[in-house]
Image (cartoon, rainbow, N blue to C red; front, side, top):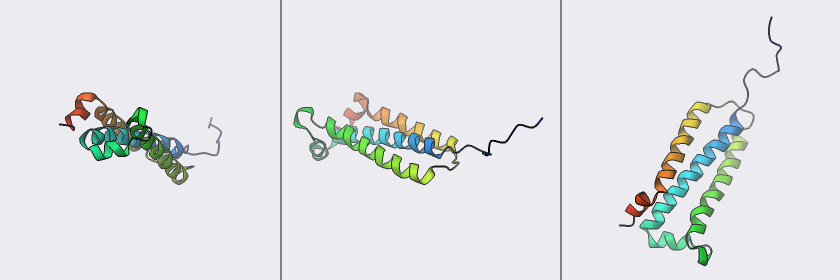
Length: 113
């Protein structure tokens, strides 16, 4: 007995892939900014958006804004489409792991020396 057709041969996964990749890029950017702020007094100063919180405001604000922008662009481009989710998943996971690596004090403090 054949299964009834739902009208979709393969489900669109572009919207989910867009969210995942944008999160990976945002996480990686946060790690890079953390290390860069440790290495450069100029960058550290540019990341101070609210004095009492110091550069933490920029270290989190820039990646969140980038994540939202990248997510919107990728979502618009991939919405309703089938993309190679496995490759995007692997790339996003790699970016997330590298981003987390740069957030550990022994790693980002090494850039300040």
